[in-house]
Amino acid sequence: MQLKKITLTELPVLRQISIETFTDTFGAQNTPENLAAYLAAAYDPAKLQQELTDPLSQFYLAYVDQQLAGYLKINYATAQTEAMGDAALEVERIYVRPAFKRQGLGRQMIARAITLAQQLGKTKLWLGVWEHNLPAQQFYAKLGFIRSGQHSFVMGDDPQTDLIMTKEL
Image (cartoon, rainbow, N blue to C red; front, side):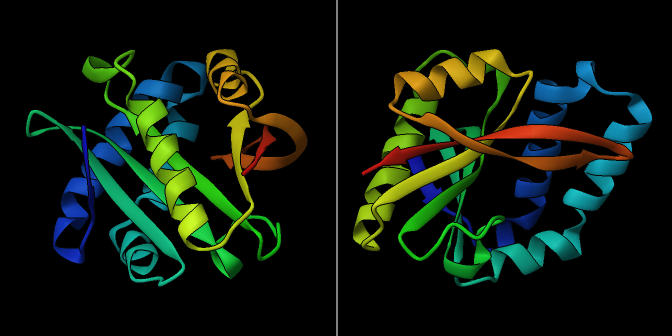
């Protein structure tokens, strides 16, 4: 797997893979209306452009044999979606396309996030995971993340709960 930092010129690719992977992961568990409302808001091109140009956020596209396989988004300092302090780095998005799941890409992307966190002098990695996404919770637990809290995540008009999981570095 190769991780390539995304530039503004790749915004259409980022938008496409974001919609595809989010729909694959959460589409069956949510109403079509709530999913459509979330996708329109979260992956609006202007919003993605703002995220891409934030110096405290970084996006990476994951490739396997030159094929787009997934992506990773990290945030630190004030770009984090929760106030976790200057010692923390957030993995806000980590998604793998269906054809590339179960090949170790998620593990490799978390390893890259850990490396980036350490390069930035961070001592904690954290993320939010939907309370009903048990496979993801188990995956993160295997990597040493522990549940440390929760926060709300709104899907259309449906308030949901994400568990906050942290890993000390």
